[in-house]
Length: 159
Image (cartoon, rainbow, N blue to C red; front, side, top):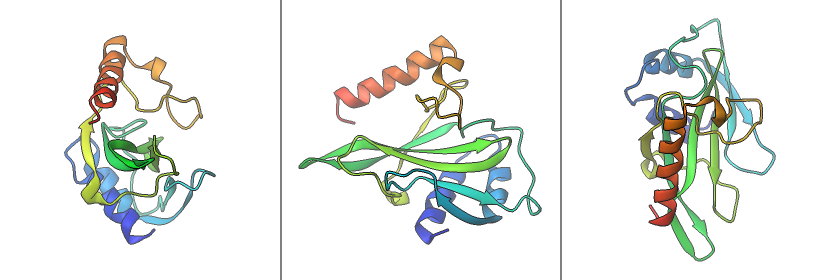
């Protein structure tokens, strides 16, 4: 795991949410990473040595926080055009997912560039059906509208 990847994960896991301390212990037991996407982005799978940590029941799919970061789109900088999500599978750290609306696949951002936002309970930031996380349809309607509404507001106002 690179220093930059470690710094990002440490920044996310330093936030206060249920399961953060168990996931931080898992993070200290990461024995390797590998790319989780073929596009060249910074998304990585996390390989945790399960003999050195315990799974958590407090986080099921994603930590309850997402982060945005600036990306280049043409000649402009989209201040919140990138998104970073830490995913959990069966109680274990699983992936750092980095996505973007920018022109190029997003690299792992610097922790200093991250802006953190809570994810409403029951919602997920994954709008795909890649099998690695729950589909947005599993969230309650109210939570889904909150997530979609906040993304629309950020897009319209360039936040």
